[in-house]
Image (cartoon, rainbow, N blue to C red; front, top):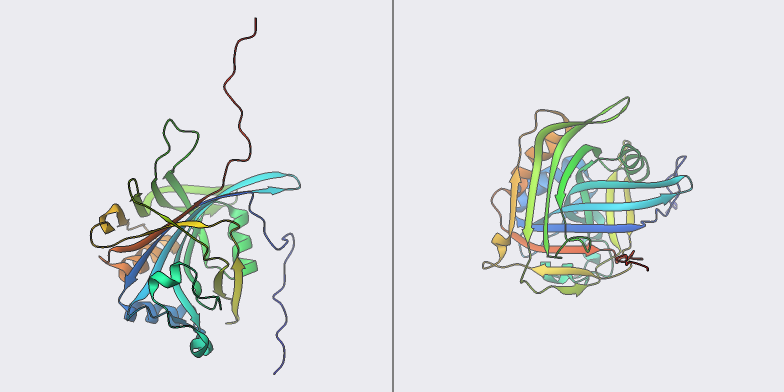
Length: 284
């Protein structure tokens, strides 16, 4: 068997990509496997959907992150529509685990990963890097968010984000009003557990049909909220109907894959503050 070469790293990019700060919320849905398998076969023919007691897992993943570069810094927001999947050849190498065990990091093979179906992002540089480095189906979008923050009067476990359609113009990102999706997660009063489930294997398929895998390692545990019939309504998902383009495709696929399925789990991560500028005082 001939060893595969590593995928190229095009200029001006450098790997690994280091996050200066990360704020992240994900929502998982256990859904009927038929539509998931059908879409996965079109987008990533080298992958098969994970089977969690007869259900497939669709995952929405919102990220707000900061990165420092030689010439300054950049802030990016994006949302991924993912399917939990594994390489088709590797089914006999996977442990027999359920969804709860998957979220808690039981799959140490890391063959179970996220197959990116759509990624919407507000940073043109990140759109280009994701597509060229990791074969992400990455397109423009923009966001309105409400996140827990130590710089607010009270820090509450309430997350919400709206992703709206955008287009890339010669002078940058052009924002449109039509929403793609809205997620609101009210986790106040729920008890999370720390889970160390990374590295997360992210899968992409390039223009030549080659399957790529890239791991993301988060250097601290996530907070995982397991939901059930009593708490699933803590998460509300609204799918929009954007006018056209990749945003329209993303909304259509999300509506078809998730439908009215309740949320099965939520996982969050927030980078710890590294410094604080304190309240001033008077000097006589």
